Image 1: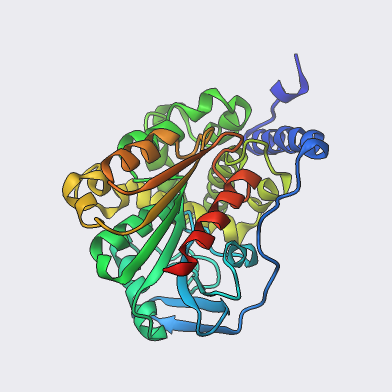
Image 2: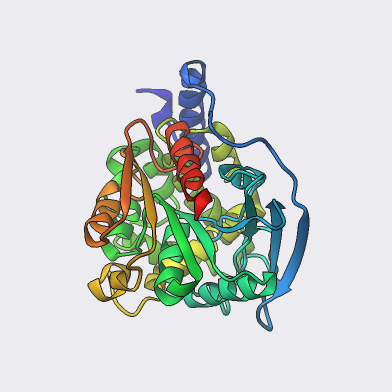
Length: 351
């Protein structure tokens, strides 16, 4: 019996899975190409906050060219927050790059707050930011949950969108959630799946999202923390073709993990606050984006947001372009995906 099958409880399960995946990544690092194609590191020329409700204050930043072509970056999760690397998909001599942390995420306050936190709240936050900056129309860039939000925004405010750059398409249908959180990805990452499921009793395993939601909204701080670590570790362990030990380690950061896990579970428990399953892919909704230039970048081996959703969207959306990256999973930080996203942003410089 191998060492990975020896457990002493849920905490040991989580540690073992992260260790195995981390070692796997370390062993393959020597064979990984450096991530090429991103623009150089830059610092913001403007940072601030915007009060968007009685509860929520959003952090935002601007970088690149102050009078340049505006682009807004929509981060994933929900609950993931932004990072300095997110500025680097865009030519800073051309683009005015707007990043913000969504409600409860990153540097926005209060952290991990679920009240007044729905898809439609954030859609209107994007509009409030656009008006705050005096921008007429902008390019909208979003991956994973960011693609969900970008589609929601474009279908609600199509006249404010110059173009869409989307990655790792996620429309929050039940079958997409079930594939990742119930049965599907588990077949490919059994050691990480064991750690993820070990937190939940057998009697509740018919609905992991609900079981985790109950724990992530518990009054018991220790229970919340343990559930947040397990939920977050599962996602970061499966998001790249080659697991990233630094990303896996991030899941042990209590503040980040709690915001990420709580907000994700909140949205997924409530089906994204959409009126119907499959809402974003309905013909009537797709028609609202007619004429908006769009590029879809999809990792062929994405097991978080499988390629079938991107393909369905592309087939329904006349004029959209789709690019499958053959040596990538879900992460925007994988070389092939990063390069294609930069290429898409470069393409829209002339709009």
